[in-house]
Image 1: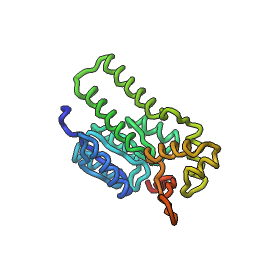
Image 2 (image 1 turned 45 degrees about the horizontal axis):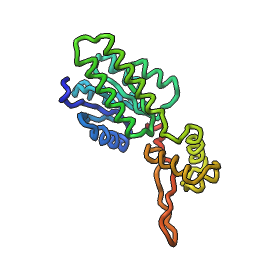
Image 3 (image 1 turned 90 degrees about the horizontal axis):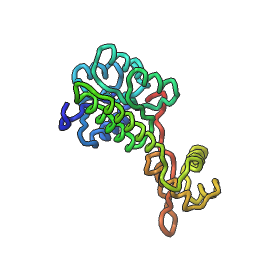
Image 4 (image 1 turned 45 degrees about the vertical axis):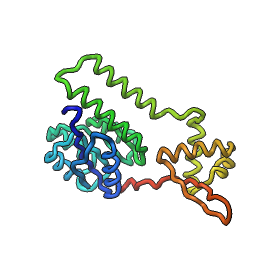
Length: 237
């Protein structure tokens, strides 16, 4: 595949709303096109045999045939396709199992759009490095491994002035409240300044973990309140 050729993607996801959202996000990334979607693994494998995609975005919890059965079927039928898992499943053995069966990346719902873009761009680099040449040398392999390590470090890094402990406190507070909170309320509960609380809440909002709910009073500007984004039920995703 040359660099000007579109990367063909099949999405296998049982939730039609999530499926449509993921399709739109993928096609916003230059060079990627979704050629088919499926709501179960069995149909997804059939689509892969017909459309011969380069990449599959694969859910785990699905009817008919789940994600593990599906990735095994893709390998059993010798379908030459790479797999990125997008699922609510977050236990270590599940992640390990999917990676052992050849998944090149794993995104836990809900995820940041930037993380999906990163996964797609990593795939594209991987594809051009290893499939754009008849053979590879040690330098190419080392370059690919180093790029993966740098990407993982970047994903885990926080902006200057923020730390993981306070971020976790903010997240735990939102989960305990199970409702929207203001920056003032967060600051009071945790024991930090309102400005600092606002920075953490805005960081979570930009990353897609929380959403802003406007609270209108009788006078003055509306107050920004923050609440966790609704998670997809793990038993149906």
